[in-house]
Amino acid sequence: MHYIIYVSAAMKPMDAAALESLLSLSRENNIAKGLTGMLIYRYSTDTNKGYFIQMLEGDELEVRALYDKIKRDKRHHTILTLGEGEIEERMFSEWAMGFKNVDDALFAGLPGHARIGEAAFDPAAFQHSNVEALKLLKFFHDAN
Image 1 (spheres, rainbow, N blue to C red):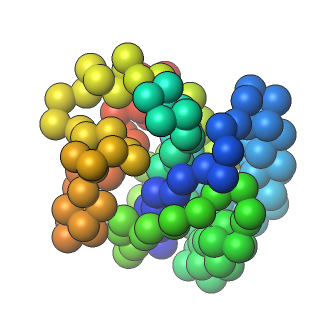
Image 2 (spheres, rainbow, N blue to C red):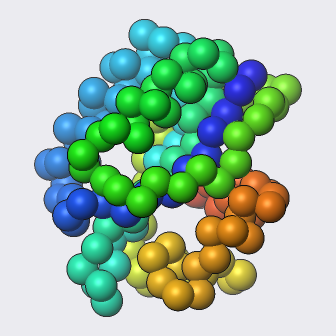
């Protein structure tokens, strides 16, 4: 089972309708391709910007093809791969695309996690080991 974890910055803040549209299409496509995963969107009131962190999992060719498509999507920029590799089993097997819309207050309550988009967020630290990114995604998965 192959996976990719990435972060990106939204071109503009996304409202509930835009997020619902994105999720609806993603879930439909992911079911057809046998992909699962988790998407977290965080809007920062401090910067008036939105940020994504996502994990995709499934057949390697399908995951890579979708990630190539995601990288061309004009709704976001500054796409950074945090981790990629093989796992024995899916983390999000029950979700074609799990989703969590996170606000500043919830992120502030997560010990040890800097806020994406701020100076304290060090993407390079995630790239050396995807353990922290996986912990963050798993936290939101288990909270639902």
